[in-house]
Length: 242
Image (cartoon, rainbow, N blue to C red):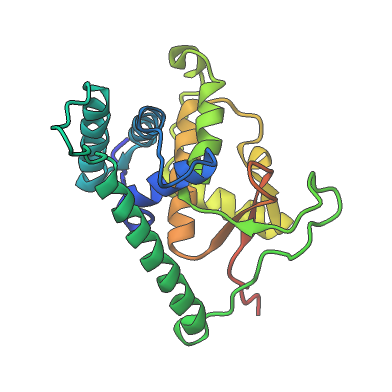
């Protein structure tokens, strides 16, 4: 597979760290470094498995987390009358500043969206349609929620060599066209329906990359009905059929 997605167009390493803190409902001022480091490295592995081109900043932060973890494991030897600085302090400050900057950026982006978008966009429905599994409003999700969903699917495959049965090599362009055709026909799809019960590793990875490309081009919205709820895809652009 010679196609790679440039991950830095989506979210960066601090976004991943904030996502893990939120997912685990942790106190940002008292981060359990051992847990966060373990989960962060697991995400790095899955991103590599999904053929994503990791920016160097991801690996730098990984090294930083490992370094902080090792310092916390060392016995404390503060000099008399002095309190040893928490090795997490600099990272926490960096996270707080980044979160503040990101919130401000999102606020400005929301104000400018009408001037920036030159195409007509459809919105995810405010209420679920009949037959949905959840009774909550659909909220657009980010990269790492999507990675979580693929991680669960890949985790259920078992041994990769046992799943490589279909030798038909679907191209990425073909997979993008298939997804768009399905959405045009049905308006929306759950993540499970999109995979159509096909446990073939290659198809799963192509599906992931196709979704990233469609999100990048603002052609598809990926939404979730509440935390860890059903993931559903919607067309983001109203197409002119005239």
